[in-house]
Image 1 (cartoon, rainbow, N blue to C red):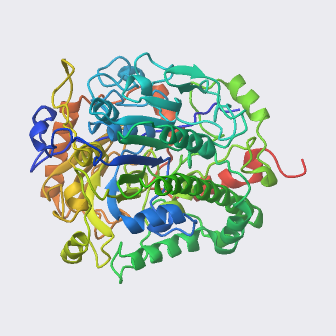
Image 2: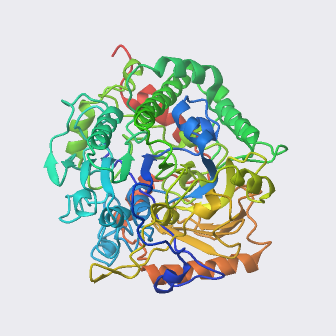
Image 3: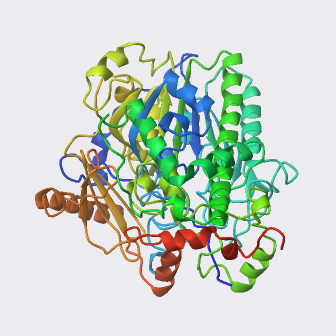
Length: 627
């Protein structure tokens, strides 16, 4: 029995660069200035909703057949940003999201689940959020905001490191899963690697909900209680961080059968095509653009056996049901805000931490932290029979093949720097008053003539990055950033840029055409600059060579232009070299790390059809209905 890891990786952060790379110490001048704290009741409430491991096309506003009417309604009242990028895994991305600073600086240069031996103890590789950064919650709390969190945290390492819980980092009230993942119905781990730990207001507690309450309901109920029980007129910052759609794919059965019929009838090829065509209708892509190929190519749906199709359909159906259930819970929060008269003056942001799900099957990972006896005991409790998929005793994800429909039309998957791992949905609804103000009808006029938008005034095509979310929130709240010092201690200045001017139509971009934004994770790298993206993936993902893509013309990253534009590529490589030096990248080494990565991330540039087939056959699960 192979040992395995539930790999979760979190959003990684990139440094902002003007012309060529700017050292982090100089980036304070690049941050959009924000005003001093506003007074009175005009300051907006802020609701930050984070989905876990959503593919680019997994919600209705981004082309999905999955029913997400509440997120779609927020998009209708706000803006859709189609070129938002993040880190390819969980905790690095969340560190950047909540601080506006690169994740290497913030303590999560790698995740504790996959840290290499030579990285342990190095600055920036603590594997928990460190004191070199300030969270948005700390700054908002200091300015008079109530600060609430409910959901997944994943910023405290593997042992609830002292001083790193949400209550330590600015949240007045919090109920959190400290781990990267867990069973959605109970307190069992998603894999036998670590003890599942929940904390409320700084104290470790058993999982609430009598070990039966579904994760979406658990976190939504608590957040609604926090908001309802606010007794004064101060605004709130609510960070609602769902586990969905993180593996294991588990869901109440309410919506599963309807999606099972859809996917069994359509198959993954047709679903990918239909989502792409819907995106074209929404104005994401040119009307004459054809569905591009992707890496890796999926085995044609028609070539699968009936048994394989049944399993694949059911897995996709369970995941879709998770997402619809999450949307239903978001609707409960939105209705509460409307009923209390708070909706209009609430800044609402929805995004995913990173793209898609793990590209290796949950029961097939080979990581030294899970012993063979522990894995054998764990698997004995798993029931992956077809009729049980989605229940609390099943352990499934969609492995490499699922990224095809989930992130249409992009290539790659989570844990890689390809677009499917880093390009995710972003929806923002502005408040109608206060420091941020609303955009009114003016933004539609700008959007119609903006080269980074389309004839659909709700769609913004300009590049945005995970580092930009914290400064955006601060500017709408009218709260000053900490700069280089917080409460007498040195901290790193914010590295992102506020998106407010982009959202209200007073600017058509916040990142310049020659400005490089950079990221690294697991010795895989990405550099964004204007329409260009340079990537390099090490073995086993790829061959370790730099590749260059125009991701406007070729979002699926299948046409490598490195040989045609060596000058552009060299400029971007130089930007990466400067970034790596300034944020302190430590290249992972060692046999144990290599073996772990090889089991976690299959090659992106090779056909994955054999892995695809093996992952979804009943024989691979070890159980068949009737056994």
